[in-house]
Image (cartoon, rainbow, N blue to C red; front, side):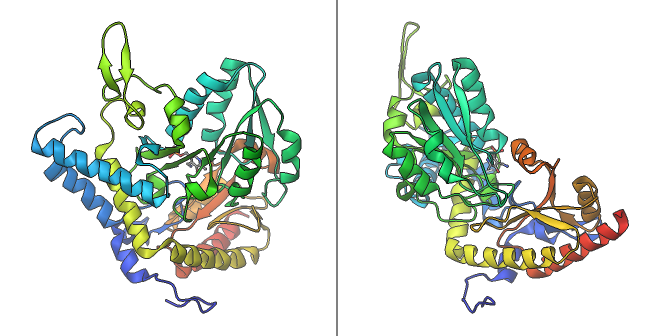
Length: 414
Ligand code: PMP
């Protein structure tokens, strides 16, 4: 298709929408309009089929058996890990650890890094726009070690105030943890520049990529971050699986996160010798079909091309922003210059929850509430927002229906 700016993008909407069976669904008698991609994305047939195939033809445990099924699925699982390594351009495959998701990856780093490197009085630097998943693990660590959390503030557009960074970093700063893209505001943070600045002071950086991975090309070597975490389910893959990328030097130094089968070289009652990364961090039977399904999801988006996805989603964002700003009383929360296809808004005199319920009656799925970013809500002095988050299978026609739905809800609720 050709966009309004004349760019040709490889988005065949008809075909793409065919690939996602759920998009044919009716909700409350209306065609489903799914604008809650920030919470979880829908799955293409290729992913659903990979999971079905696993259970109907391949089910077996990995890394353990000599029998054919086990050997074959081990090869496929490790092949999935290699695909993920290539997708984010990690240097080594052993820098890719399968986790349960973004939250699990952050907890792993907080636990292992904290155990080795955090002492009383040390500081960990976050930002005001973090998801609770990138706040609470650090808070728990700080409570345990009597360390301190510090926060990079944002301006009223929802951009980080980086002028304050120099002042916030001290000789006690041991780690910076920040989101690549805000799930609530859509702000794309200048992660590469922040990493460069942190590294000049020998401070490692963890990047929460939960919202970035479905929208942008992530290159961990280019970003030079120390850790990068994301979830499968937000990038059109299965739930219950995610990735922690960690630089080799950290993963070699870290102790295991959890004890269990699969992480060892030898065990006696006196002492256990651990396997190297990634197995050292993958105790117990993993989410086998999840890892395989995640690699299939990445293949799927790579076939469309992240550059094309970016162009198309930017156009959707622009279109929706224009439509929504024309509605009297509607205020968009998060107007950063660099933004992904996420729009949070409030409407004067209307509770987001009530708006969400009316939109649902029209078959439109949006998220309402604080989006697990309560400190951000406190910054803006609001209890919550209505959030529409778009994926490449969404359309301008859906945005038109959404806009009319908001207008209808306003007339009903006022
Ligand atoms: N960080 C961000 C920015 C998120 O958007 C989310 C999910 N909403 C998470 C972390 C947590 O992801 P998960 O629940 O998949 O672990």
